[in-house]
Image 1 (cartoon, rainbow, N blue to C red):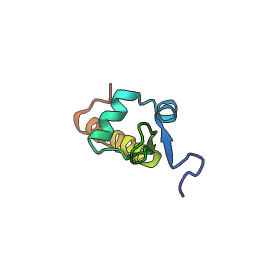
Image 2 (image 1 turned 60 degrees about the horizontal axis):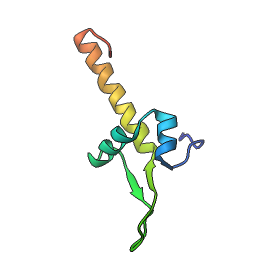
Image 3 (image 1 turned 45 degrees about the vertical axis):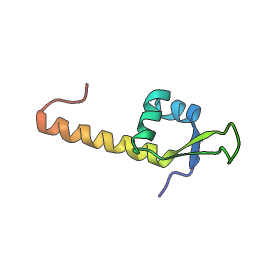
Length: 80
């Protein structure tokens, strides 16, 4: 069952507070296509708001955790 207590889309501040990802890593993950985001800036507008898909951030972090757990079980060392 999906966790419905978190929004589907959130701004950088919310993502940083909930997941601890700061601006640079967050935007690098977005540029690399590892998490989903969208801009609310309309055509011809100067400003908008960048929103991040919360489920994609959670999925990325879960995948990273799984990779580290597999690595820890094969090399005998945990994450540092």
